[in-house]
Amino acid sequence: MSRNKKGILLFSLLLGTCSLSGVSFADDLTTKKHEAYEHNRAGMANMSMARFEEAITEFNQAAALLPDYQIQGRPLIYTPIFMAGWAYEKIGRLNEACHNYRKFLEIAPPEMVEETKAQHAREVLEQCCH
Image (cartoon, rainbow, N blue to C red; front, side, top):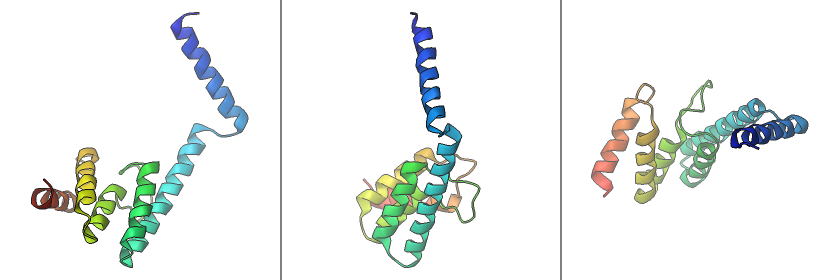
């Protein structure tokens, strides 16, 4: 059997398995978007109460589900990777803050990035991260 036919067969089997389980790829993405949004929202609530450790946990869970800029179409969206960096900065964990700010700047699409956040990330990286 040719490599191409094997690939088609494998894809067909995978698609059939997903169909039998009743879970579609679209349903899985919708679930991830909802979960990521809820974690991100919980992170923002924790930030507003100065519960930075809890906020970091929530932001990291949101980012693990969907990276920044993929949690869209909902009110009050903040980028979880940036926000985790900010929370790390608030508690003095600068190595983690620097890591998150670098990651944020690497993945932030230029047409969507908020300049104030990008400027803050660049300033912290320049002043505190070596």
